[in-house]
Image 1: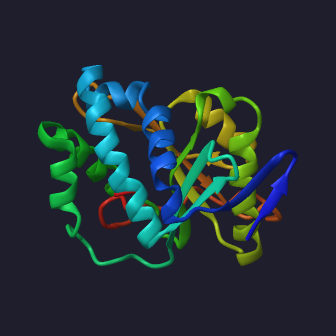
Image 2 (image 1 turned 45 degrees about the vertical axis):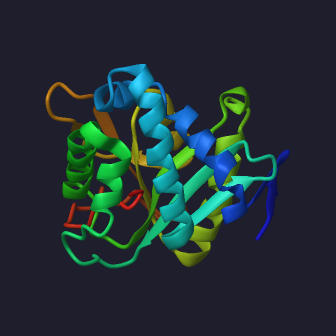
Length: 220
C-alpha cells in the first residue's frame, strides 16, 4: 500500500531496500544518551551498530512490518503484539551476542528493562523509527508514522513505543501519544519515556496500560 502525505510517499520496504535502510538506522541512532550508555567509544559504536541494525532490520522484514519512503530517507519497524508471546524466547540470542560482542551485556540489559515494562494489552509496537539527518525537521517522520497510524485507527488498535530523548518524546506527544512513567536504565543510564497511543476518537484518554511479561524486545 502507498500513501502520500504532503510531499512524502510511504510504502512497505522489501529486502532490496535493506542496505540503504540499515545505514539510515545506524546513523540516526549513532548519537544520543542511549548510544553513549551502550557503547561509549565512537569507533567501536560505528562497527557494532552496523552489525546490530543489520540484524534489527532483517528481523523486522521477516517478522514485522517495515515502512520506508520512496527516497529511502526514513524507516519504521513495527510489530503486532496481539497476545503475550511465549515467555523467555531466546531464539536470536546467539545472533545478538555475535553482532554486539563485548557490549552484549548492555544490549541484553536494555532488552530486559524494556521487557519488564512492556504493556500486556494488545497493541502494535514501534520498535524503531529513523530519518536521515538532512531530512529531519521536515515532517518526514510524522508523515511516515501517520500512514501507519491510520491503519491502526481502522483496526481500532493502540500503539506503543519507547522514546529515548526529549525531542522524540515531544514529537510523539504531537502525534497523539501520551507519556507513561519513565524508565531509568541501570548503572547511571539515561531516561526512557514509555509512550502509548490509544484511539483518537475515545471520549477520554485511557489510563496508561499495565506492564506484562513479553519476550525479548523484538526490535531484536
